[in-house]
Length: 235
Image (cartoon, rainbow, N blue to C red; front, side):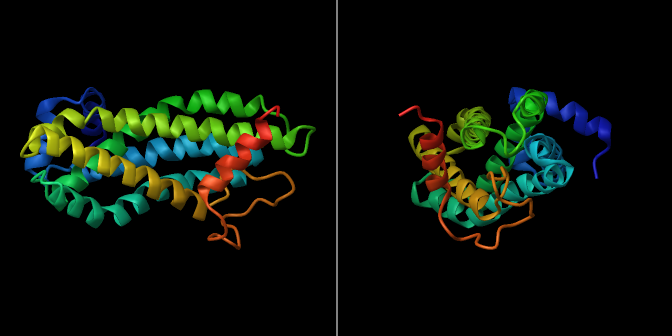
């Protein structure tokens, strides 16, 4: 495991997208990049997840702190083969290991961003009305939409930092661009649905706090977003 000082020095370089660091990770997978990215994903997503679940108490905060990093790792696991195949089909010249390294790096940067945003979400949570208070459904919908937007923003921003490097490592810039956006779309789609299957993250008014729902495959993430918009809409 890399020493804490090494990981601390890597975070600024990773967020800046330094060429030397990313090139070394792409060309030599034995430099501890996997462990450093895993540390950042666990630390950043757990901190952010804790701030989300705190509205429903420490038990729920702990559950979400565990499940948010799990979403990232499950998304990587499910998308690794698909993304490697997309990279080859689209003629990018990027193999399975390189596509995994790009996505892992992107999720690590995303987790750093979410960790930095966690104080904001923490104080936003403290200022929300108690579960069961008047207007709970509207607050629940607004809370779900807020965090959906923040997580999507962090993910897109983090991965966008790597677009230039995907183009550089690909056989052509065009193929690299197509592969990058195919990877990004796949990660957003799969990650969103996994988050639904691992719910709750935001306990709906009237439901109990629990680690997983008894009907994890009932419905979809996109239905939840639709109903959240409906609940906060004045019409």
